[in-house]
Image 1 (cartoon, rainbow, N blue to C red):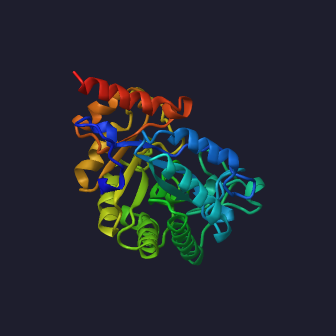
Image 2 (image 1 turned 180 degrees about the vertical axis):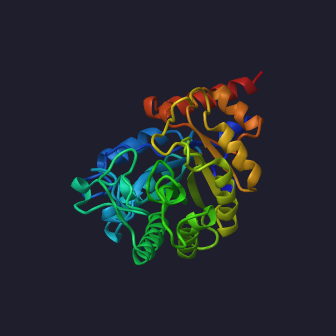
Image 3 (image 1 turned 120 degrees about the horizontal axis):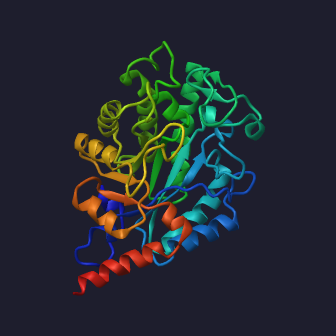
Length: 335
């Protein structure tokens, strides 16, 4: 499914058509979740020149009770589609492809933001933030599956090139995946096959909504890095099931409590996870995490640690990073 990415006109350097900007929350949307001019301007600046093959838009809430924070982007109702279309158009005019990440915060939501008690697989406080949640019912699980389905339709109608289902960073689907927060005794809890039941239902619903030829990605928290939490062996089982269910790309992350788990540092600190997942599936795998040097990105591709490279904070801090990286590769080719 690398056809999703726009190849740049360079002869052989891999990063030139495999560079991804992962989602980075900006809190630049309007208070009602619609795309603001500030948000459009931000993505216009980041995508300028088309040096990034795929830009994944920051996580967007699928229901009001699944909202993670104020000024978060919404994909929860049809009224947001025109603004999302403007956002996709800005990025396309600059020459990049774009995916919309869709999410429900679960117990990471806060009552002062949503006005409701957060939902979670089990009544266990989120380790990172949020109020004490209430356990979600099976009927509500069905409602959330349908909300993901509707959100994916809106993303496609708005002109995005793909949707990414968020199952990382301690949000709702990650909470179902992790034994730390999923203590259910029904068919949604217990072993890994039960803990990914909702994920497979979401993937099936999204695939039904967007059709067979529209790329669907999953952002996977492949290890909690916490005793008793999700392990890479769990995630290899999950990744194979996701591929079988129709997922086209798996985007690797890790760390249930924080995006950068203690003890992990340096270039590509999730590379061992991406390599393990890549060995388990035949679909492309995105490696994101701490990559700031173009040489490191090229090395991970050459060593087959991943198929695509995500560079987040470096681009967040310097909008010209991708331009300079690609120009560096081109200059090396001229010798």
